[in-house]
Amino acid sequence: MKRICVFCGSNAGHDARYRAEAEALGRLLAARGIELVYGGGNVGLMGAVADACLAAGGTVIGVIPETLLGKEVAGRHVDHRALTRLEVVDSMHTRKARMAELADGFIALPGGFGTFEEFCEILTWGQLGFHVKPMGLLNVNGFYDPLLALFDHAVGEGFLREQNRAMALADDDMVRLLEAMAAYRPEPVSKWLKEERQL
Image (cartoon, rainbow, N blue to C red; front, top):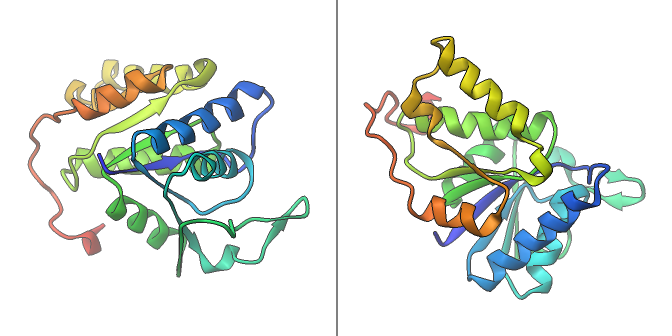
């Protein structure tokens, strides 16, 4: 994996471990020569992972919709001004598609609705055979335990196949998660969609 897309919150959360793990992930990616792709933000866990990766000598590519440029939260610019590269796109949908195009794998740190939506959408794209890239949850402090339990519940209730549930990798240790992602070999599925424009 040469590039990993990280989905995460624009807030830092109440527990200091969330920011600490975001920073540690940024440093780890830099140390391994893996480029970070993310949503281009300068606040919350988004800013933390990007800043840590940059400070450790890593490469960071941000993708942000033009509507967020120049916005401020608590006196800070939402868009990050010191990235290796910042791509400005026309919409949130284009942002997600571009991040997916750039990345060789995906990791979700803790976050809110946007993070959940991004990770579940990329899982759906994998389920449909649109890509075969690894997708992992960095389960900091058990943050994703309820979501993983919901995935298991969906299998038990017949709404999700076991092979598709297995696509959602998860670990509370980022090194183990990266190892699992590197070893990821999805079950073959029939490709429902042939082109991105069909999404």
